[in-house]
Image 1 (cartoon, helix red, strand yellow):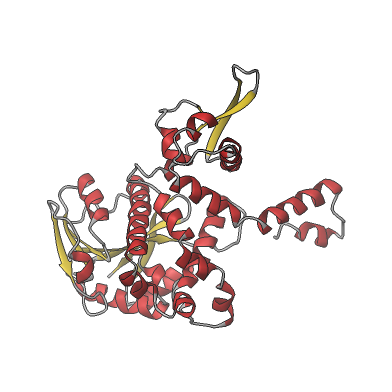
Image 2 (cartoon, rainbow, N blue to C red; image 1 turned 60 degrees about the vertical axis):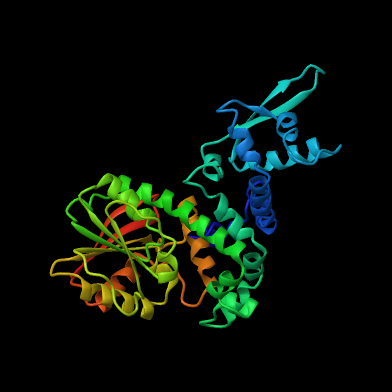
Length: 365
């Protein structure tokens, strides 16, 4: 039921308090595009990393301001206004104290959520924020209506006259930001998957299709050292993959063939492609597996109902962000079942979940 459905169904007008709350919420949504810009500015200024150097202690605005490159008369006030927004969204914790001039001032430290935006961490969303606010990406978000009106459109291509992948070949800064964003997000996701999924224990050879530089395989093998890993991606990606014990890097095209293994992992790949492209990939995986072999899909499972939980909001936003390329989408469990059937696999199960909306899905040959 929608948040306003109860009023229309009961033929009851909202109370003043209910209308005020709804009005404020609508106002917040209409101005919400400012928050990602504020968060990204704090990341680019390394404000959160500076606060983290206090190792859990609160830090005054004056202390933070003194470490910024430009000093001016309005810096303290403007910085405090930025930090207040971040605190209101639980990126920062705060308290107050009275200073030597008998003035009350706010002090800040990182919240648990805020630690995920530190640039100094491997598990970081800092570059993911940079990517969302990059001018080339932001220009795409401003044209999302085109993706609604023009079915099958590659929105990035329509806006920039070139696909995102070709654009990144020319713009190295965006390419580096994208790669760092994916690495940071992947590290977080993989840790959460490994906390909840035990299906790697019986695997001897694991092929990671679209494995990038092999980060996910490294995390898996560190927990399951008996596994022989095969990291499979495009040759231009594999050439940058560092050597790692227990991992063989293989370059190729997943739409031509996939290396053989008793299990094949497909992580955060299906959501980039249409159903037809996914089926073509999964059929190649099917060919590469022995009898009773399995494909392990690590991807978001879109909730069936548009609930108001943080998890569902996040999943729905990510699903809409996939308009950036043709065919990209998140899928429900029902839609993954359909991919399983159309790819020729015999059985399907959701083996584990992570962070409510991420799933480990097994397709058995």
